[in-house]
Length: 353
Image 1 (cartoon, one colour):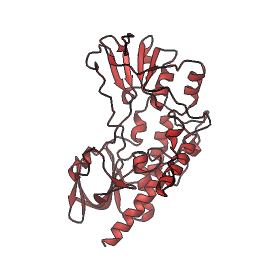
Image 2 (tube, helix red, strand yellow):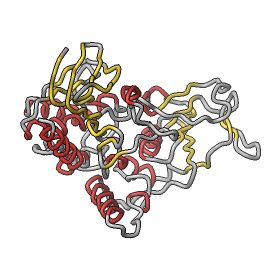
Image 3 (tube, helix red, strand yellow):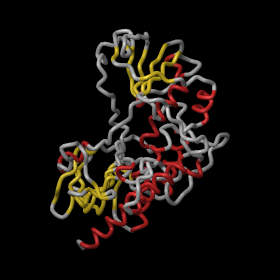
Image 4 (cartoon, helix red, strand yellow):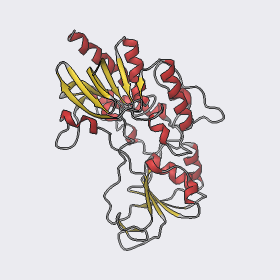
């Protein structure tokens, strides 16, 4: 049985930001990470994946990301290298690979059961992200289609699809980036539920964070909803996407009604044959370890105030998107919410001394 003041579950960008502020607060803590090495979800991105922002606008608290040579938008590998150095720089106590089975109530705190033992803590920060829970919609015919099906989480390189006809489903950033990545290598049928909405070309991750922050401030003070990032568009026009779009290679088809054995079938009967379907349809928060706490409502949501779980004040959820803080699923956006979460935990622990 191990005892500590705070257990952080997840050692990616959110867990690292939490570790930075826990270290500054002088609290005892451990970070439990299921991955074999640093980097979180960035370890698994496709080969051509790029950040939405230059390195100077993609940093965790305390230490700027080093510049990326040759290009303004860093690669996933550059991010992994940065996160590894970040954890070393701040001597973050990361235990890996450790898989958390469940978080349970415990007198005076919470019990964290893992495949490497049990921790008792005064507070827990869940920072597991979403990568482990890819979402594919229940489209009719998915079990009928004879070709290959994969999710964004499984995509690595266009070479796998050279000379094939590939359906890319999804009108967000991953759909646009993967469709652009396949251009010139495969015949791409890009399918979106509504016409693609590109953000202005000068918008990057720093601007997205500022826009999301202003929306939250407006909502918190009772002012009219600004619409946030969603009011501007869905797709950040990073250079490869911009090039493919401007070349006319990113024309989107409306969403099909079902999948047949050979490919998609649209309302009205139009059919196209395809060798593969890539579902760029997003992720859901990876929160199975919190099931023992019984926090979810009948709609499957865990109510929070900021990052703190309403029904369990010793638990904070960090880095899952706007639900737990403006742009908190981004490198630049997770810092402010991590700082607030640690401040809240520090106050809680002081009250129970």
